[in-house]
Length: 216
Image 1 (cartoon, rainbow, N blue to C red):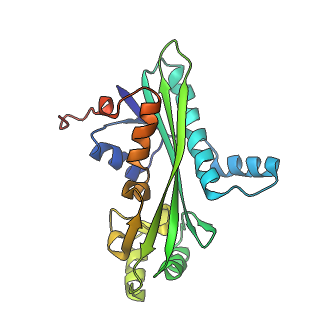
Image 2 (cartoon, rainbow, N blue to C red; image 1 turned 180 degrees about the vertical axis):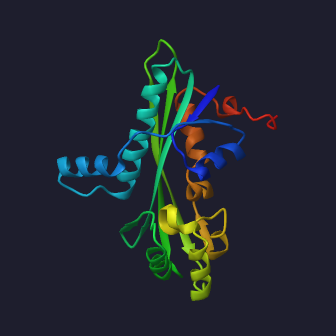
C-alpha cells in the first residue's frame, strides 16, 4: 500500500524507514502561524499545546491528502506536528544560537513534556477520504550535570537550532537526556504506536504498510 508522509522532517522520515516503511513525501502548503493565529482569534483564547499540535497535524495532512485524492492516490497520508512544553511554556524551534543556549540552561536538570499531534488519512479512488487523529505525549528529563561547555558545544553543532524544544534523542542530544516516559519515538517526531492504532481505525493493518526491500 502506498504511504505519503506529509512532512519534510528528516526525523519523521527516518522513523518510518526504520519501521519498514519507505514513504513518498510531500511538503504541506500550510502557513502554520497564520492557522494558529486565526483559530485563536476566532475562539478568543490561546490553544493548549495538545490542541496546537493536533490542529497543525490535521491541517498539514488534510492539505496533502486533498492534493493526492484528486490524483487517484490509493493509500494513507500521515501528518504530524510537535511542541515541547516546560513549566507551561511552549518551546518551539530556537533558530538562533543564543536562544538555544538560553533554552538549554533552563532545561538542564528539569523535566518537560513533548506533545506530538498525528493525523492519518485513508484515501481510496471513488470513496470519501477518512481521517483518524490523536495526540501522544512523552515526558523528557534532562541530566542535571550537563556542563556549560557541553551546552556550548551542542549548540555550536547546529543540531538544536531547528528542532522542537532544541534537542534530539536520536542524535547528538541523546546523551544529555536522562529519562523518557512514554513512547520514545514520540520524542523523535511521531509516536509509532499511535500511528499503528490510527491506521487500524481506518481498517488498514500496520504490516500492510511495510514496503522496504529489507523488510520480511
